[in-house]
Image (cartoon, rainbow, N blue to C red; front, side):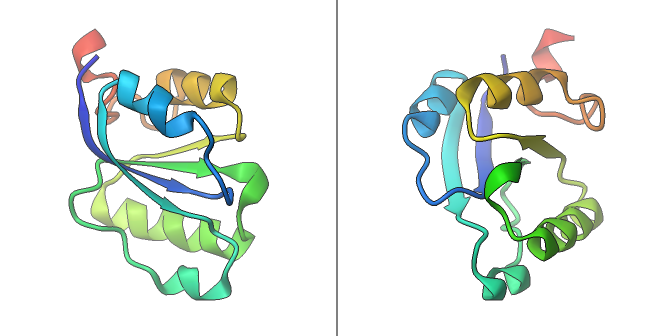
Amino acid sequence: MRSVEALMIVGADRLGAIPDHLQKLGVKNIIHINGRKVKQVQREIPEHVELILVLTDFINHNLSKKLKEKASKQSVPVCYAKRSWCSIYKALSHCDSFCEQCPLMKEER
């Protein structure tokens, strides 16, 4: 699997062991915003982010919509999962909406 320079996680107050698992997959930099505060809708996606992971059970719905729009404009793939490692791993490796663009999957093809 190719390493990802930066992954942005949106949702959940705490990530627990998720960052450790992601680093084992080759993710070098993890940016986390909890997605609960209304002001976070205005936050921009950093330019170096290659992939966005949205934890669906812990996010403001308006933020999710705006994030998807911003990611589309910047051509950054967005992946959706619940806050469990199994769900995250499955989403990162099988998301039909962006597998062709996904930086995690490029070397496996």
